[in-house]
Length: 437
Ligand code: UDX
Image (cartoon, rainbow, N blue to C red; front, top):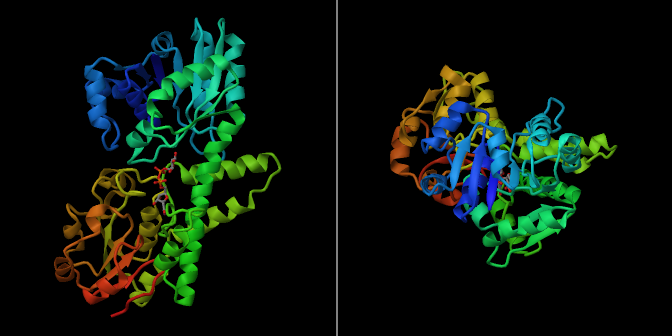
């Protein structure tokens, strides 16, 4: 099939590349000429595991190409994906200007039947708005469908190629048939394509992300309470998660959720509720608790250093909002590091992928280390903010020799408390007993 993807951010690029992988001819459209030129030369503009291999293969097979011309994209594609940014407005709602402006152009440019697919995460009622805007100028038939993405950064290619479900909001049989044809190769395992109305599809995305953010936040509260009563959140988590009604996933406590989706989507749903006179009390709490959770380790660090962080050097492992990405948007590391800098600490930081992004944000306020072991050299403490695999089994002897004080503050519960105590470290984590040697 012939596809156009408008917007080559993280979602658009993964969508375009993976659709080319099943034999479709895909044109990706972006207004950024320099970016388009780079992509034409085979350069993947984001870090996402496995994307580079698929990208190169499909460019070489001439199934994947790039243009700055919206008109060219629209002439080529029968199905047009809108994968445009919907940033957070000042008041927390989603800014739809990119989606609506492109829709206006689409209305003027299309000459034959098209399915316009909202892939961006957009508030309930957006498909209807897009429909109306295109209809103002369109001289031909078209349908607008909602098709939210459920791609995790770091696993986006896998999630796209093997989705647990595809959600399609459509009230047109013609559009539904085309969308099913497009997605059938991805659900051969029997996972469902769920067809519903556009508004329900739009809300499904917000509901799913807000539920997951709530699940994590609930566990963060249980973890905080565990510390008060001397329970171990790892045990509680194992005991709860084995109940299939609860499930094992997304029960890991830590220093809060971050990223480009959860924080934005929870706030957008809260705001959308308010606009309809509905107060999402549970989401108000989730937002408040998550903000506080990001610095939950700060009092432990301060207390260990007797409320004096001036002149102390802290090594920080992990800066990205989660492993396998260079994305630092809403990363808990940022809040924690800002608080530590304010208290006068010096920070020696390391992340396998996110160093350039962190450097852009913090400039010369931080010391950037070449490796995880460089970062701990002569530091007074180690702080872990992201659970990259390489941090899970460090050389503890080397660590001990490098640190001037053998203490670890672990925001991701990477180590077994008893084991690390035996290694000779003081150890402070989330929802488990503190070890003070
Ligand atoms: C999320 C959704 O999972 C995806 O379906 C959606 O479309 C986009 O948003 P992503 O933001 O890439 O994906 O990351 P995810 O793996 O879901 O993690 C989100 C945040 O929750 C991270 O900050 C992570 O550290 C945190 N998290 C996750 C926890 O703190 N505990 C957990 O148990 C799981």
